[in-house]
Every structure is written in structure tokens, then in C-alpha cells.
Amino acid sequence: MIPIPQYPIYSATIDRFGGEKVGYFLDEKSGWGMNLEELERSLADAKSKGINVNSFVLINPGNPTGQVLTREAIRDIVKFCSKHGLVLLADEVYQDNVYDENAEFYSCKKAAHDTGLDKTDALELVSFHSTSKGLFGE
Image (cartoon, rainbow, N blue to C red):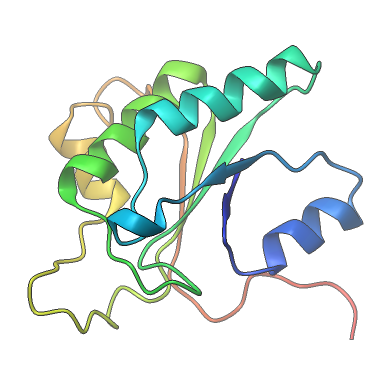
């Protein structure tokens, strides 16, 4: 599952390796936030089409939107991924680039800890904090 809008490396990589893109829409009216209803809708729609969804991409802070998700939203996402057995690919590259004084970066690892998911091995989490995402080719 990938956010819409999103940094295009994810959709390009999925295409390159013959996967199926399953988009979930960010809500522009709420500052590009996300909600569980949209995530559940997107996942159910994909499953109804026979798509085996195995992972979830989260870009926080967002690129290209710049949004910083709330603690509640991040906790909801780690619980959603755990519930559905999705590997959480947390693109947290821009965690030091928070310019809204009312926003605070909250990592997926911290959310997993705070919800107890790290103690039960109920969540597979890969967190990116690098400018490289292992691109192939030139």
C-alpha cells in the first residue's frame, strides 16, 4: 500500500518488479492526514480484486506534502499493519525537517513501543533514515 500523493520512487519500484500498487488517499482538507477508514477501504478493495497486500509505505514527514502525522495517526498505522500482517516500511527520512512549530515528529518505532507491539513481535517494521533507498541501475 502506498500513499497518494507520494514520492514516486515507490510506485516506480513496484512497477519495476511487477507488483500491484494499492493506493490509500491522504486527506488534503485535514492537512494531508490519514484515517483508518480509508486504510481499511483501500485494503478491502485490493483484496476483493485478488491482490495479496504484504506491505504498507508510510512517508512521515510527508513528501511531497510536508505533513507531520499526529501520534494518534502513527499509533493507528502500527496497529493497522499489525492487525493485517503488513510489513511497515516507514520512510522517516525527513524527521529532522519539521517546520511547523505545532507539529512534532513521532517515529513508528516509538509508536510500536508505546502500543506494546514491539514486545510481542506483532509488527514487522523497516525504518528508513537515509537519502538512499537502494536504487538499481544508473
